[in-house]
Length: 394
Image (cartoon, rainbow, N blue to C red; front, side, top):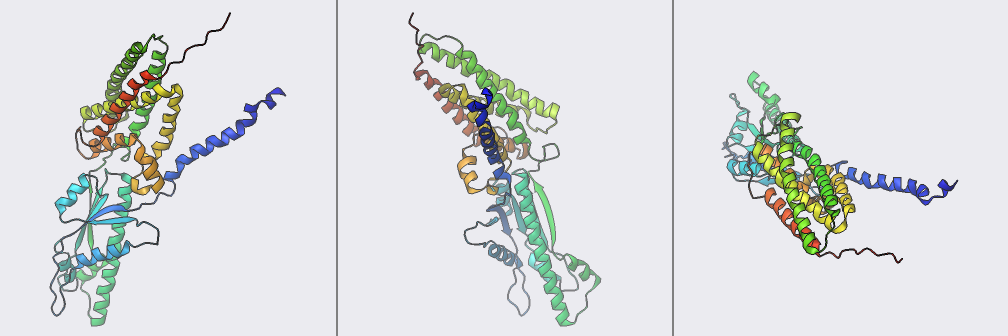
């Protein structure tokens, strides 16, 4: 049959395999994601304790030294945790609020004194404080919390073994209170900071809003480009006017989408949006920035340039849910760092979970520069040579 001889029919299996291969690449970042250099703050406020006929004991420093030694890993591999020693609780809280640490461990001033009391008739359980920075990234913060809980569990086993061994050598008996405390000699207090709440799609609300906004950007850019392209222009002045109209129309659509998406997310979907106006304005700026960026590419490449941003959606969405420390170096340095949509997610995290309002620093600044640069590129496309239709000879 003639259809069997058609090249497109013969190539269809190869094209199908190529499409599967390309879209399978989007799964790589989220498969077996392992943390590398996950920053966790450590504050040692332990004052130590004087024990007769023994050097001064500072168990807080012993814990810090132990964590340092555990950082060592196999040659060529990065450690899972990057312990960051900070000087005070205030410095730690500032770092958590500035998204510098996924979690923190605080060793209080009386830690050594209370641990030493476990060998006496009036024991008091020492306590370690763990802070989980939920809003920074749910998955990474959970892993950081699990690692800190593992540190405390290891300490409990070591302390219990040492104390029981000491009592055994002395032939001493345990009081009921001592036995009760030695079951878990070191207590822990876990506190969630910058909490994600119950109506945040498990902390993924910023990522949930990305896909509809990005799709709306692509659709709006394509529609306005096709609509303006249908009009006949006589010279570059007319072309410039058309481009300016395109930009102005995009600004109007941005306001509608920014406030409309915020309203839909809050009142219909049920997401918790603590600052409605600031969120709506931020989404307006984000939409306009992305619209200009897509329109800039389409202005030079034509409507086929939309395909670039469709692929960006499929490749970028899985990365946005991961912390940079959980990506491979290739994806972190060569793909994630170049994704413009990461500024949207970072800005929404600050608004949703960190109590920050709309400010110039950070995401808004980056999105504004993306928009301004794209606007210049759109205007510059006026200088692109126009194709002149070839007239047929009679």
